[in-house]
Amino acid sequence: MKPLRMIAALAASVLFTLPAVAADSYPSKPVRIIVPYQAGQGTDVAARYLGDYLARALGQPFIIENRPGAGGNIGASEAARAAPDGYTLLMGTNGTHVLNQYMYASTNFDPAKDFEPIMLVSSFPMVLLTTPTSAYTSLSDLQDAAKAKADSINVGMPSTTARLVFELLKQQGVSSIRGIPYKGSATATTDLMGGQVQVGIDTVSAARPFITGGKLRALAVTSLKESALLPGVKPVSAQGLPDFQVIAWNGLYAPKGTPPAVVQKLNAELAKTLTRPEVRQRLLELGHEPGGGTPAELDAFARSERLKWEPLIVQAGLKAE
Picture 1 (tube, rainbow, N blue to C red):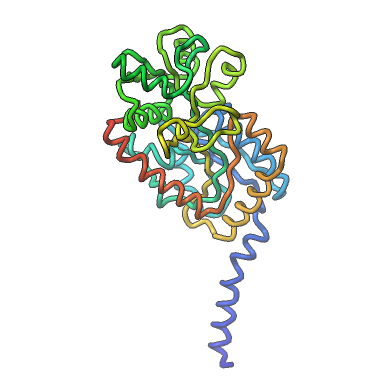
Picture 2 (picture 1 turned 90 degrees about the vertical axis):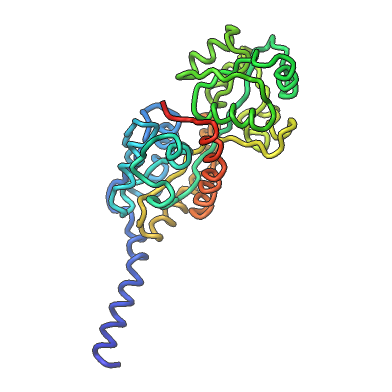
């Protein structure tokens, strides 16, 4: 082989082995996971729990850094601008990677172009609620009452995702209900139990203590199938509105350009973690259904969510407060 060709061949072989070498030695220093919400919030708690397992598996600390603000946009923007070396990750959500780009004037990042998806970490449905003494025991009861008493049924909505459930219900035929926005679950739950609103929509994790304590009744969950978080509660899709689904979710992301071998290594380790029985049980206790899948599957899921929600958000004129 001529000298120049030999040099070129050696250079090419070095380049092709770099990703493998990078993956073998990764991580060689602490990794930070940006959580774009306050400490103690559901996404934060799940990130800290899973970060501990990743640290044990990979031999380096996984440090949670909270960057709350603007519905998650501040933290997501910081992660998008970070070096694509695998040492900054983002615990993204349906807010950062689906809803915010349609509800905020500017996000300073593109969820479809600025990140490498790693894995869907967890998801959680919403639940439709009423009081134990209410005449509504099913979604059909609510539909019938809404038809008979137009605009007399107030529905408490303590979050953006709850608002999406409300708007999708109206779009799919449960009309003549009136949405009442709240700034948090506590006030919305108090008003529901006090009769100021007749129906509530909240996360399972927020509502479950009141359901198991006999203070609230679950009418339906918004997952496609019955949720392990609330066994025995039928989904909306099984109560006359086929294909109805509204879920919140968490997904692990890296900045765009992060080496594929590093992404795959993180995906593999997270997959192992999420199959551990004690991890799955703990996530369920926190109100999260464990996720899984490939980077491509998370990417496809997020894209399908954007296609689903953009027209509804635009039509309903939903804007961040």
